[in-house]
Image (cartoon, rainbow, N blue to C red; front, side):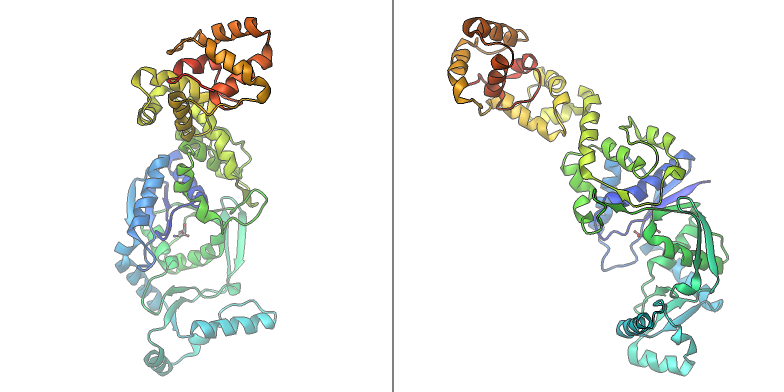
Length: 440
Ligand code: GLU
């Protein structure tokens, strides 16, 4: 059975880049009636925070990306210790004592000589006595996995045939000197133990994948299907990594982006399929095909989310927004009408508050000098509140007869004076919502 996982480290809020990973894995599982696991990669006790675990869940729930179960790596340390022992027994694990400064120096020397900066395995030559004295001097060493220097090959669900020379990769450190198990080992153990069949993650993980395939083999297991999606860039192709902090899902939510808009964009961006507003997650799942995604960096522009949000809002029935509208203080008897009139005129729900303030309190009128006398005359001719659906037509016809103005010269000064804006809903629809008579 298909099993996928989204495996965030709870060291920050999730952003659009993480969402891409989450969504792909979610859709693969759902498309096959499989299992989608939310795996919290919290082996780093200093950087992992409970508030981020909660925030990650909230963000996924906001999008409707439901998981079948949650797993936490911090509760599985015994399994990782057992795997480490197995690697020791199989002579695929060795202790190394270089300090970060020493490693850095080695790397610089290699680079100066035009060689790839691959760990030289000096620790393999240490005798038991050497190790004992190094341990006494420096504390426990780190544990490195001994790669088999062969080519590592797999068929990637997005990148196609991949072949990596293991000799060009450093033996990965799987356990730190302080005993902390690192992601690479924990992830391998979990993917095997949880029966994960498909792993999609960012292309920054390609080298990890190569080493993980060998670690899985060393532990006597095959590996899941791997696919690596391209990384997101900004609209001009610039690296997004620094800006991702501002593209957290919660920021987008606060900016008024609708879940369906975000899902519609992220489920198709970087694929050969067009981005269209979907009506449901099921729609997106039905059309999802990993094979349509390319390996080139994918341009992401937050601005693309606003038209999709606006279009989504236009599809919403009153019942879907009744609570939001009540929260603004719109009286129940005009709430539905308010939504019908406004929904085609907003980009995000935030704008409803502005429109309601305008209906309730009136706008700051915009009046050009040459129109002032006309507007004063027109406002004097307005009937008293409340206005009906016919008010605008009757009023403007009367003003046309009284002044000879017509077309834009008749309507625009009145719209600007009543709403303070050039654009907005049909005036005939807006007038009955006004709670305050317009004033100059
Ligand atoms: N915790 C890892 C990360 O966030 C998971 C990577 C993976 O999917 O294996 O990068």
